[in-house]
Length: 536
Image (cartoon, rainbow, N blue to C red; front, side, top):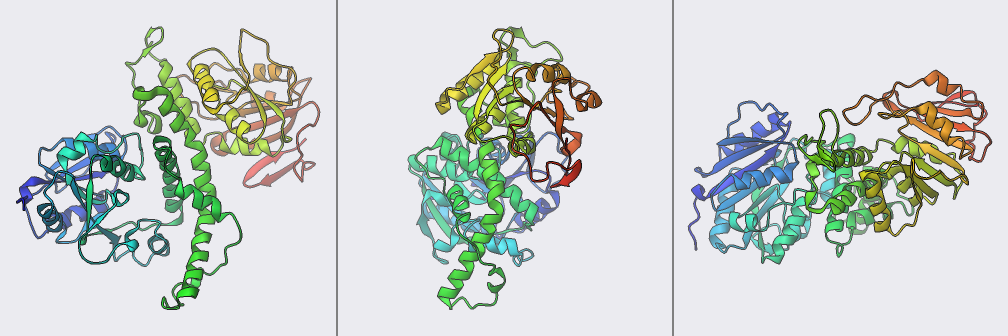
């Protein structure tokens, strides 16, 4: 038995904007049954101003997510054992001691230890937390024996209560930093470690208490992050099945009975009835979360596509958190001050699509488009809006000026096996056999929405213009002559005007009516789903 001691262990905790909870975690670490281990706090983001913390070292890194923060902490120590905790997983008094005992029993380089994470008593009665527990949404501890050490598969590689030999972790490149959120990055790391011989031991007496009081908005945000991470996981490992996605899709089939209130009433030993109640309650939760999950899954294509296109040049933090790299070279040399590099433009267009910038506008637009309509996306950039319309069954064509975004769009179409036309503005004429044309960033930098309207009404009987209040990039956006646009032109008239969030607008124009009317199309003005719509 190797004599690993407290001096051989470093505890690494990534954190961001949760100082009060972190202080409780650190307080519990300072009252462990053993002492002499090191604690490293890694603050995720140079925009953070952490208070004085009771920790050995506090390191601040550019924002890149918890996976990158954990890796940074592991590289910052030379101690042979690294233990990972969440900033909101409060350790029981014997946590560190139990992990050390496991490594003494299993000193081999491939051995790692995972402990139990249950809800903190202060949040244990939260209805959402309880559902995540009994439905195995949060973890799969329920399938393990409640007592005694046991060897488990790499699918239990939970980074909120985990210790591992540092050399093995570093050799396998740690957590994949392409994962921007705390979801699936630990399971993916465990999968790779298993190829290097990982042997994972579960010690149920190594206990942490998860202090996270979920409400519904936080749960929806959590599931959106899970969707993005799961899609990235299966993109990295195509042999894996997207289990969460499958459950979300299955939840839409059939009905879910409102039996949630019976969970605390029906005894667990009434096995068949208890199982039925929990199945129906679980289905109801998934049905409510499915729209959020499926929308985030679709948007995750932006991350997966750009990652595969750029290869080793890809930077997840730059995409998700918008970090800027002003010293990057453009294809024509050094980047001029106040302008973007070629990659800056790709990242920003993908980031806007990943954030769902045009989701609402696209949803409104599809209420009017006839099935199988022939649609042109003008000023398409990387083609995210047109690709989603193509996925919905429309016949889509693209147009923009030559450049890196259009080159990337060509790659995206080829990657999907789609043979859709791309027109290079200034080099070829636009097609004339269209049902509709759209430009959802008609007031972007350097664009004239009135000129765009005049151009598009020459090639399509219906035109959609999006006027977003905020422009991506360093250049100011075009001043929008809203009243002039609202008046239409001699060829087109305003069919509908939708006010979107943040002062943005979606304007629909028509010469004739090939678009599906909404049930109250004749109304001069009405409010629908919180949006003011002005009719003809």
